[in-house]
Image (cartoon, rainbow, N blue to C red; front, side, top):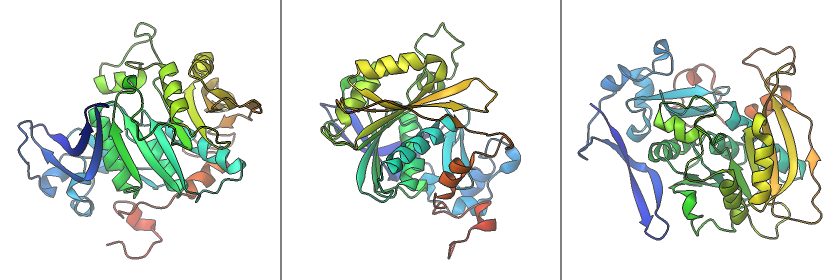
Length: 347
């Protein structure tokens, strides 16, 4: 039997946007009828990527019904046990790009003396499963997050992941196609824009994924990099000296990113190259961009090496580890979290 995740939404016909609310979601079948799923049934079917890491009945009972993994999904406890993330088993799955982008944006704001607790609005364009927003929002407690995602399944997972990680009600998800422009509630009101856009545009340039969710996540569809840059430009608060958009892109296509940002009306403020290891070729490029300002000078930052010399594949550099350490534990104390959680009552 297949299941759909149906959300309660408010729709505006002019913008064709759906605002998702995970608190009232429930599993339904293709006909729309409610499906009562027992924890026993779930515990026999849903795991992390490895079957031996199956969640126990007790773990799943600790989660609200709407926040338990559905068929074809995994529930993963990741990044020093600080993040609970629902992902598609075979579709789009997060990687180090999400943490690199959230880390970069956070550190750039801190370098300008902006407190993590300062009240501000942040927009995640092409939010996917919301890992960028979850990381940024958990580190920056003053952030009110708005997420925009094209794909319905990813948008629904994003809403659930925000709830899993304690970012509701200060975060919301809107299902929207940026080809129609920005929803009016976002234009000119954002202090921060985060964007991990599709890197590739030519289906013949590389072997495209057969999974549709992966395909749309990795290859440009209705909007190209110029469109993402233009949306970021239009979202930023005009005249602010602190409002910035942060992008991550494939290092091989860094010139395409730089050209796209400029064509989208932005000016590049800082660039940082990401390496997996120092002896590896460049992996990604991170860019901070702002609305044009005559006083803005471009900075070339020291490279970010995810795994410096002397670290294993599961260890990061000291500052990245500090960033992960700063994140609060999830509100739901399940699985391995029960072994070392230092909070109070876990019930």
